[in-house]
Length: 301
Image 1 (cartoon, rainbow, N blue to C red):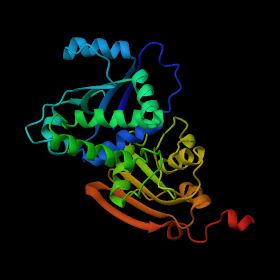
Image 2 (image 1 turned 60 degrees about the vertical axis):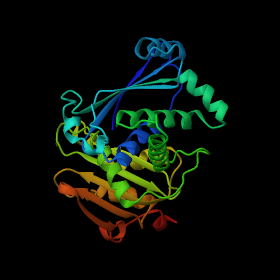
Image 3 (image 1 turned 90 degrees about the vertical axis):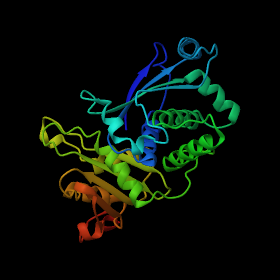
């Protein structure tokens, strides 16, 4: 999922970790099973602005936490997962994705609610984003059965992202979910030279997941692979124990290169490696199979 970020004037100075939000968006896309790459415009604002929007767009004179404005017109009984044709009508050539709509989140309201509910601002913002995204995917909560379905989707996506009420991860993502998150990361590849897009999703022993895409450079030797992007993000967040990595590409089997195998071996010589490529093909190997007689920290002890 591509997020087009925007901050209301003066709010950009507020420290905000956007990585959990980006992961939450990807997890919503995976939970819904979006049939194509999609994009959303996300605006962080304050109560005054969101109240003004409420008044002009919804005839409601009050500040709320989140507002969603979908661009896709879904047929009755359908959501984004079963509406490929409707999504394609919203394809944006500049974004190279189908534009789902706009989401406004009041940081002021979110902070107040996080304190009221006794959880972190991160958890509140991730929930509000998930709530807004599922509205853009065609869900609603005006009726009890609709509310139950939408709430279940939100909780499933947040759990996959490791965002729960007590900020603790629950359960372990399935292989299919890891591969789907790798495909979402692939869509953000920066590969103007090789045109070989790669995405990776690294599963930590504590249940957290970190994604990454390949980032190329005009000085070709400075290019960084998706696997190493994910590893470096994970290590920078204090994670050093990994159990699996999923890697996605478009047209060829994306087995990790030698440099990535060595970096992965530094932390997880017994790592499971899952790959997926054209037409949903999937293969699996262990890192030990890909890097026999690997040299790592144990050899230096």
